[in-house]
Image (cartoon, rainbow, N blue to C red; front, side, top):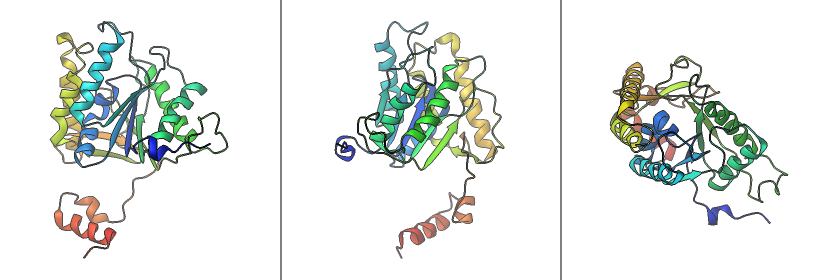
Amino acid sequence: MTVDVEKEYPQIDILAVGAHPDDVEIACGGTLAKLADLGHTVGVIDLTDGEPTPRSPDPETRLAEAAAAAKVLGVQKRITLDLPNRKLFDSFEARVALAKEFRKYRPKVVIGFGDRTPMASPDHWQAMQITDAAVFYSRLTKWDETFDHLPVHTIGRQLYYKIAFEPIHKLDAPGSFVHDITDCLERKLESIRCYQTQFSEEKAYVFERVKGAAIYLGATAGYGAGELFYTTRAVGTPDMMQLLYPDDRVYTERYLRKTTNVE
């Protein structure tokens, strides 16, 4: 019997996936905060609890930090899967575990890792492959028992991010764009500061790198701060002027009237 997910699980517009707690805050925390401010429902899925880690006394401490960071950003739902930190691999079991969450919460957009992170955790690259597969598995029919009879869900868009202080190679990639986080940059940094076990005083340079990357990316698009995303499809628009002048109320209101048939 198919599970009535609409009754049991709230629909979430955007789900961001990370390998560990703090990944999404560093990569796209400003965007999550802004989307939440705009009224979208936002969720985070951490594939692992990030433990063990050198400076954290126990998993409960890291989970408490993650909950605090989510509150700062306005994230409505944070889920931690029971996959192993440091031993995360793209396996069938990992794909199914993540796809089940997609089927439950029915996101319109999934955001996740978009590349390797040399000299950092190999879990990140595995997380990208798991996320790609789970987006596909979420919509496959005739697999009811594998997915606990959760109904299929087709995710309309998938976006990729990079960790903020990694080298930027995708700025001119097809389908890349910068999201304005000028008003949310400080909240992004505040959410990262919630992870006191990960960012001690000797790692204070991390915040300058994250801030510097955001300012640089924002400048490329004329914003005070930004975050980079890319998609495998070109980014299109039904109204070129609304795309080119998103902050101009004349174009925005005209576009809204046309799309909602309100005069």
